[in-house]
Image 1 (tube, chains in turn cyan, green):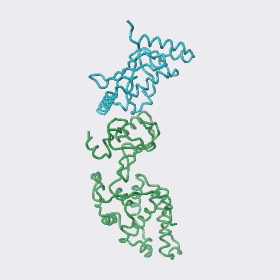
Image 2 (image 1 turned 30 degrees about the vertical axis):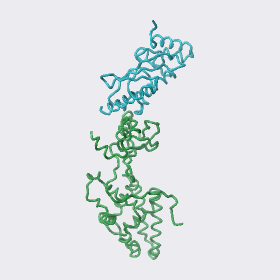
Image 3 (image 1 turned 90 degrees about the vertical axis):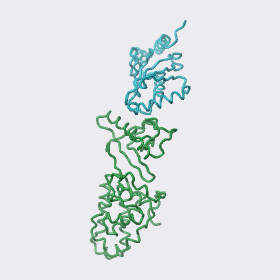
Image 4 (image 1 turned 90 degrees about the horizontal axis):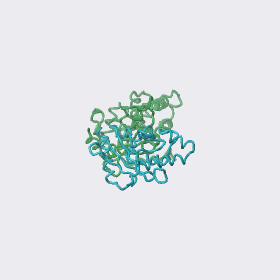
Length: 157
Length: 271
């Protein structure tokens, strides 16, 4: 328990120190609870998520970093490996392939990489996965772009 | 917890530029994985191997490096300049072979100049006087400790019995011609046989090991008495009387600075 607190505090200091190091990621810790974090990540360019800003919620377990954090999208996203309703993410490093050398920052980077490279063969969002698996790239991209515009971009006017 | 204690016996801790990848703090008790040599705190990497083990029904004997995913089979730690300890993954959980004070003393002997007790024990007389025909009851225990210290493993029974067998058969050859040979020839033959048996396990330390075996045999002393003589000559305190509890203080206070041991594979024999 103390070990996870100490480590999260180290990550917090690192985030404060290098706020501008990665302009695509903004990590913030809950004011009253160091086990709750949120992140704002930019949709990677040349993907249907470009131009969108997506919010992630982290719930860090007390055994961290021996156990992975639980991460989900708070912003709605149309992606084969993200549950459309709950925002749950299917990503190996958040499950079996977790290593304690990952940090919250590097998990964000992995999620950005997942947005750019979906894995339609292990879908949490079957509609999205089926579009990609059937080769309907255009259909997938227009759906994803529409949800990016609806949910991840500031409302006009 | 006993962080203070950990800090005091860890080497090169507190280097903030190179933190432990698991706790992100300064590394306490430097520990390395045996294949990729990535460095962690001892507690951090052991905790991680336990977490990995719990995910399997039968714990694996290897762990993937958290940094590079290389398969590693043991954790090397406690390096003090001349020796280190090895913790095998899940093979002996919660327990790894710790060199006792007596083991450390024997290991340190290999870092001293040879010949330090040669004038006390008359090796040639041992061969001349046929003293080698008397069985030495302490040889097996002495050899076991010696091999454990040299290869830093607890279970050395196979190596021990191999080397012991070669020693005993070469000393008790029931062959008339052998007894008529010159003592120098017997000595040479003995040394050649024992080094052949030991070399593949002890490597570059073999020649010194054979000399130490011969010295111990020639002394005719039991282990305690032999240690006492040896340590007195080296100017060290006697290890046998202290219990394992005071092991921490160990032999580090010795005035002797070990010189660099060079593993010279070419030093196999006389040219």
